[in-house]
Image 1: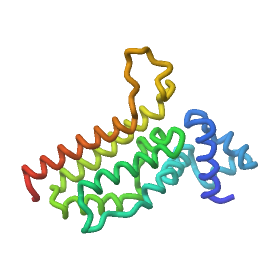
Image 2: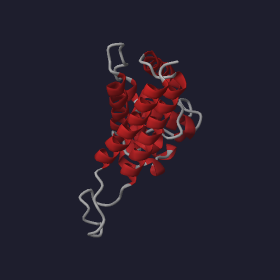
Image 3: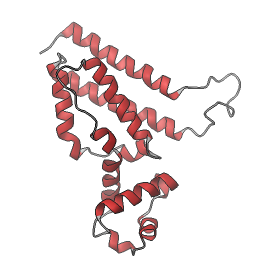
Image 4: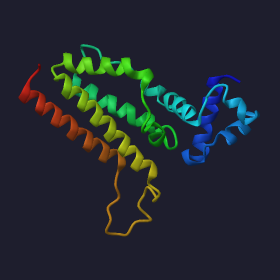
Length: 190
């Protein structure tokens, strides 16, 4: 049993039972080991959850970084969409990610911000836009994953419109990008 096996099994457990029900006791049982054996790899449950969050974000963390030829607006949208898709891959993916510190992803985040700056966005605006888009995306996915009503609206009263989660996400993302683009055009680069 190695660290990667423990994390993979923990993520499978997460998908089956949800974040609130994930326990080191259940995980040890799944792995066929005694609970203290897990402490060899993870000192606390918080450490385990952090490793799970990092592993769950791998598809987004491995996504292509922007190149100088990329249009910053299209890249900004694609980056947020990739983040959303990755959060949705796991049950309670947004809750798992929320509050985690992307220590393994800091270099990539710096490179993304540097790309925006090179594209004409002021550095502070690039930082705040990335943060706003990230928090908006996590919030949207939290709502989407918490939605207990039927996706087709059968459980809703007739006068309540059915919300298309992806459409709502795209609308909000477009507003964030529009605000950043307008501000950048008005202020100009540093």
